[in-house]
Structure formats: structure tokens, C-alpha cells
Image (cartoon, rainbow, N blue to C red):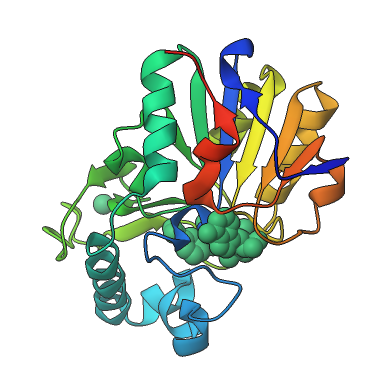
Length: 239
Ligand code: NAD
Ligand code: ZN
């Protein structure tokens, strides 16, 4: 591993690019991370708000909590780091974002090809009817499925499995990538935390961007100690 603050990686030299993002990507937008001060689970007990059991017991309480989260995310905006990735995508034909975030911030910066490993605050679903509905705004437009059941947020809650089709899609894209750049993830949440090793095993050049070392830092070819909003100082591309 090479530790560096001065890396200037020219992304135009790489064919298939992946950005793998976690909560640290949105921290400077004002969305708190889980690990560290201001984390939402210090204030709210996830057993009451973010698991299927809580939803089955009291769906409206869980939905109200998610509306609070939607309102707080809507007050935040994408930053220079999100915008850098969006711009790169306009100038490079093969850029995929695999995110653990549920806040939709990449898309708000105009980025496409976003694989949302843990779902989205802006979708609702009914597992019985196989229904998936986009729903953007502070308040949910509709909380009931046509079948009469409550729609649930399309988010991987505590105790849920990741959607296997989404995870397989991410793994397949990773197997073919040339460069894998992880930004703002602690590497503590599984199975997502296994994806950087998969990229490495398949021969991608792997870069970690994080102001703190993580459990996975040693597997990366390069570790850049910087904030997500500063990536344009270390990564570049030709227009
Ligand atoms: P995490 O909270 O475990 O770790 C956050 C990481 O971001 C840490 O390693 C920290 O050092 C780093 N970080 C903090 N500020 C940063 C900055 N300005 N720039 C770059 N890095 C910074 O996050 P995780 O690994 O993503 O795992 C937590 C789980 O909870 C994931 O599923 C995550 O997506 C989800 N979550 C999502 C959101 C969101 O949607 N914005 C917010 C909180 C948690
Ligand atoms: Zn239904």
C-alpha cells in the first residue's frame, strides 16, 4: 500500500471506473454518518424505527420516522465531490457508482448508473405484490398498496438481507472494472464490505479515499487521506 496526499490519478487512462461510496460521501452535505458524532442511532433506537419487526408492529410510527429523514436529506445538497463524479460521467463512457447510501445524493448531482446496495429513501415497495414505487418528497404520497397492506420503504433495514439481484449486479460490474475508488465508507457493514476485496482479486487498481484509516485500508493500492468534497485535488480527467 502506498500512502499519499499528492496522488494525481488521471481517470481518462482507465476503461471501466467504479466509485464505491458510503455515508462519508454525504457527510459534508450534512447527512450524518453512522459511526461518529451526530449518528442517527445515538438518538433513535433502531429496534423501534428501522427493522421489519418495528414496521409490522407500528407502520405509521416507522413511516413518520422515515419522513423525518426525508425532510432532513431534502435540506442537504450535493457537494463538489458528487459534482466531480457527475462531470466525469459526462466525459467518460464507463463510470458506475455503487453506493451504500440511501439518500439519492449522487442522482441529485446528475449522476446516472447508480447501484443502490441498500435501497433508497425515495422508493416504497410491497413484497406481496412485487410492487416498487418511486416516491420523492417530504411526505409520502401513498402509504398503502392496492392490496391494502402498508407499503414499506425500499431500504435495507437492520436484519434485512440485501436484494440478491442488486448485489449480484454490483459484483458482476466489479469483476470487470479497471479502477475501483472507494469514498467515505468504514468497511464495517457486510456484505458490502467484501466488495473492495473482490475488485482487488479481479485485478482492479484500488484507491481508498477517507480522512480516517479503515479496517480495509491495507487492501488498497493507494490510500488518499482527504474529504469526499476534495477529490478533485487528487483525481483528474481530460475533457
Ligand atoms: P459509516 O458511517 O460506517 O462510515 C463512514 C465513513 O466515512 C468513516 O470511515 C469516516 O471516516 C468516513 N468519512 C467521514 N467524513 C468523511 C468525509 N467528509 N469524506 C470522506 N469520508 C468521510 O458508513 P458506511 O461504511 O457507509 O456504513 C454505514 C451504513 O449506513 C451504510 O449502509 C450506509 O450507507 C448507511 N448510511 C447511509 C447514509 C446516507 O444515505 N447518507 C447515512 C448514514 C448511514
Ligand atoms: Zn401489495
